[in-house]
Image (tube, rainbow, N blue to C red):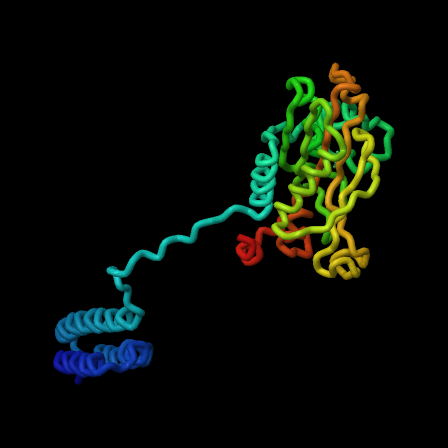
Length: 329
Ligand code: DAH
């Protein structure tokens, strides 16, 4: 016949095992599992008379609670302990995105060259973005730039060059401004193209500015950005708002001009567009184009960052995978 002592003995036996370091999960199974010792004993309680059943039942309940309690403590003491006196594990700090870092560096470098940071809106009127810069409605240059329009006829700027009109109309030359920021294009995305990316533009107007000033400013800016000796060349190119217009190429530093995959086997990498502001633009701002000249340039920040950091796929910048971004801090 099952009795109270047998339950007491069960507890003693279990306590011994617990104290001797047996595994908590094994003991749990052995004592409190479905076919464990406790279950086997409690089943026999039905053979007792009612008044005895009540007394032994009470005892069984206490023993079971105690066993449960001891095994729980045993389980939690198997967990790795926490040393509360250790210095706190501080949450990791975030860091600037490499594109933001690149824009900040470009501002820094151009400020040293005498430029002042300016800002124009991302949602522009058509005039600032196109007409003032002589990009006519039916001009082929508009195809790539015919992008996102608001219902009231404004456009998400397609280049940071859109800041020129307000600058030249609201500032008395000599002046020199730069702006970095986001722009929007009609572009299929691939390893070298995004439809939303960043540009950095410069615009200076003064008496006696020449192409030599443009060259001096840009060669210094590029050199300071890449932090190594670079070999650069001008290549004639067309942009509706400059005359003459040019692109600057940099000798590929992976192959030093021999031709490789990074430069498409050309030996040179296209870096940016630039030129001397078209005289009609100077005149349309009420300045005498014989007296005043402008220099302008515009570059793709992602392109500069790819070359600087050695990134092969421009889309990495927008995937926001910390494993990628943290390498570029
Ligand atoms: N806005 C031109 C583009 O998005 C780049 C550019 C070329 C800017 C020549 C300039 C410039 O200021 O003079 O392709």
